[in-house]
Image (tube, rainbow, N blue to C red; front, side, top):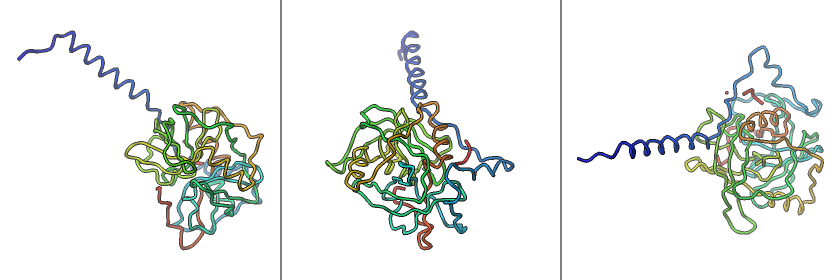
Amino acid sequence: MRTAPPGLVFAGLTLVVAGLALGLRMRHDAPPIAPLPTEAAILADVTLVDGSALHTPRPDPLRRIRGAASSISESGLWVTATSVVAHCRSPMLMATPQRGLPARLVANAPGGVSFLSTVMGAPPLPLADKAAEPGAEASHPGFPDEGPGEVASRLIGQIGRVGERRDIYAETGRTEGLGDGMRTIAGAPVLDEAGRMVGLTLSDEPRRGRLFAAPLTAILSAMHRLKLSHSASAEGRPVTLDNYGIVADSLRRSATVAAVVCLDPSLVSVLPENGPRSAP
């Protein structure tokens, strides 16, 4: 039996090692989220939202996070995925793990986008002035597994008919320790490298590492039809593959990105269909 020349074997091994190294470099996981130490737990209840507007919901062991909502105006306008608030009459946006803002559904718009209003707002996210282009890096800060976490991705295309298009993102990283399923990723904003919102996460396909999002055009056209305004003066924070976890933490702490729960007694245990850093 003939054997390959040593030089050829060495070259083959070099290619294999290089391929593995490249694969590792292309994966950019964020550090795990660690719980606050007991002596610092009180810090988890600190928020930039006016405390007079916050309510502490009655404890319910069955109540679960359904997804995320993002502030887009200081006046109390939020955007989320329709699946997050489906069949929920009493949504609440949790500014801290213990206290939240009671919300009212403004409208369900085409493309899986919904708008909520609250009596008080949180620091808003800026909306981008143009849609993301294929190949663009993005991040999805939210509550993907019923808790704080985030995903890094790259835009690879679109799917759907005109008026119902969804952006397709390929996952390039996530919070370390995050499970395979991300059934509560819905509602997470899609942020570009300038920290501006370029879409709204609707669902994921874990086996293929894909996320589907409503494009920026769907959000802006819905706001135009409903005569809703976002904050024109909002500023984003630059997002990179090295700091997207830190930026996500900051957005959750400021309640710019808030967890959505449902206070309806009959729905506290129901999750949407799509379905350690310091805690938010």
